[in-house]
Length: 445
Picture (tube, rainbow, N blue to C red):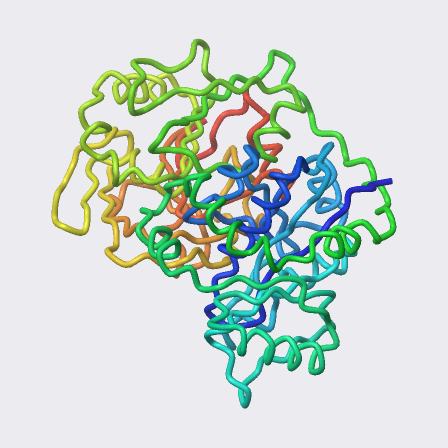
C-alpha cells in the first residue's frame, strides 16, 4: 500500500502559468521541514525546474498517454519514495486549447492516483462573464496575481459560491519577482532565494493546516503489480550519460530503471571531459541547452574524437533534442553564428529563434533497430525547436512521412527530435538493455 500524502496542482485557464504559485507553495512547506517530491503530468521537459532548486529533488514524470495505469503506479511508487508530500503538476484538460493534442492528462492521473485537486486561478485574467468552469469539483483553489484586498474578497466569495471549493491561499502579483523569473534563460534553475521571495508573498494568506489535511485524507493506494521481468545483460551494460551545464534533461525513472536491471550509469561532460568512461557500451546524449555553450562544445576536440572512435568501434549512441544537434557536423544559432559539433552524423541543425513547448506524437518504426522492432509504435514529445537538415545517406526510421526526419540513424547511432521515456515503454527499455545486440540499420549486420 502507498500511504504518501499527495496533491494535484494545475490551472483551468488557457495560458496561465501555475509554476510561481507552486514554487511558493513548495518553498513554504519545505521550510517547515517536509520532504517533497514533484512530478510533472507529462513526459516532457520544462524550461525551469524550480522543484530542484527548492527541494534538491528534480522533477519526475508521469504520463497517462504513454503509461498504463500499472506503469504509472510503479513510477509513482518508486519516485515518491520516503517523501512526506507529493505534488503532481500540470494543466487540467479544461486549460488545453481546443483542437490541440493534449498528451498526458492531469485529470486522468487524478483518477488513477486519487489526487485531491488544487486549481490555480490567475486573478488578473479572471473575467466574470468568461469565468472558466472546471469539469470536476476542485478540492481547493489558490488565487494568484491578486491586485488588492477588494478583488481578493470578491473572488473568494465568487469562486467558493460558483465552484463549491474553498480558497486556500492568495498571492499578489509581486511584479519585480516575476520580472526576475521572466529574465531567466531557458534551462536555468530559478535561484532558491527567488522561490523563497515568492513564498513570502503567499505565506500570510495560505491555510497550511487545511491543505496538509486535504493531502493526507486520501486512502492509501494499492501497491503496483509486479512488472514483467526484463532480461539483464549478463556482463553488465555500461551507459555513459552526458551530464553538465549543456546536457541535463533526462527522465530520472529511465536512469533508475536501467540501474535496476543491471546497467551501470557513468556520467561524462562534453563541455569539459577528455574521454568517455572506460568500456562504454552506449552513449546517452540527452537534451539540454547547448546553444548557451556552443563555443566551448566546439572547442573540445578530445571528446568529439572519443565519440567518433566509439561509433567506429560499432558501439551505440542514442541522442535526443540538443543531443541530436550535437552529433551533427554543424549547429547554427538564430543570430547566424555557426559552430562545428561532433561530426558523428552528416547533418546540420539550426535553432529556431522562438521556442515552442514539445507536442505529443506517436510514430511507427519503419525497420528493426536496436531501439525496437519494425512496426512498433512509440510515443513521445516532439522537440520542434531544432530544424534538422540531414544527408540522404542517413536512415529515416519512422513510417509516417511528416515525421521521417524526427528519428534518424546510421549504423549503431540513433538520433531523435522526439523525447522518449523508456521507463514508460518497456519495449524501449529492453532495447537499451540488450547491450550485445547488433543495430539492424540498412545493411548493418
